[in-house]
Length: 177
Image (cartoon, rainbow, N blue to C red; front, top):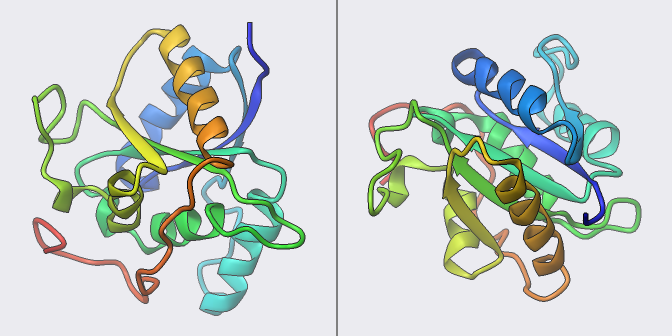
């Protein structure tokens, strides 16, 4: 069995909390969970303070970020900020590996192809440059463990793409482009 990685879960809290809980329950034996819970960060803090808290308090010792991709995850500014902070390599926070898991609530779940404009844009940029991979939800803990470990290995082999401007607000619509 390979090493248990510290995994930060990024997801749309309002829509996909049940999948985050299910993920932790089903796969908690193959990774160590790191996630922001509802109420952990005061939403009325200024943007820079929120980003710093995410980076310094929640991502600091994680090694892989898993984005649980539901139907509206791409719209969420906090998901964008979490991905951006995860793939930055700083003195105090080395970058994390990155992967996405399409949830059964997403329109493209179990389709041959997914619409790239219905997943978080920064995740898509990193799939395009091979820094990240995206998979469909599975109940198989061996797959989850393998995906997490592969993301961990890629973080030192491929440079991520963090060029997009950070979201200022949550987005709306059916797709981001």
